[in-house]
Image (spheres, protein in one colour):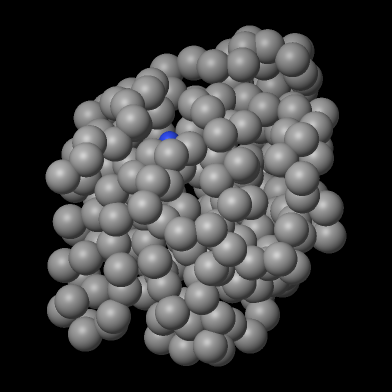
Length: 251
Ligand SMILES: C[S@@+](CC[C@H](N)C(=O)[O-])C[C@H]1O[C@@H](n2cnc3c(N)ncnc32)[C@H](O)[C@@H]1O
């Protein structure tokens, strides 16, 4: 079997082992906000061919399959793919699972997907241009890339970049340095194993998308609904500060 191209993102995320799965499955912001917003924005997916790039534990791929789409789920972490494949099999969901670096989707044919999904992974991959080039290549003409990322204006390295001040609903975002650091190592929220975090500015995203040939079709900064705000203070804060940004790009 051909080995995948290794880089700092694939090495860091392979070292994560199982930790991400538990964090993802119990993560309030992922499950009550990031994921429902993405599924809403993607709309009706029945009959669509979808590539879930950086699928992690595979929750999106399983839900999109339940909604009638035909899924290929890719991640650089071998353990994540084994885990996601086992959950899909348990539910008898026919999902193709592949270990690949997002910047080198060797043997995945060009122009075959209606949608590429990148949920919370464009900040993680080392080779941003290579990942966008591959996403563009495998999309059909007119196909769409849906991506969610940490909002680069309101999130970043909290100690020296884009920090926090105050508590509860009055918490503020304070910008000490929008441009730096671009990269740092730290565990995920609630985790123990360090991964590489990357901060890409608005300009980095837009210019990267345009370089790859994409048209920017839409941008969303969802606010928490009143229902979501009732869940916790952290969720209620999302009625004031958009911590997540959603891109829709078209080939
Ligand atoms: C924050 S997790 C998001 C997982 C999933 N999309 C979700 O939203 O639940 C980022 C995922 O991207 C994967 N990843 C990071 N860099 C990658 C790369 N270069 N190629 C493929 N997958 C990558 C990681 O292994 C991890 O599963």
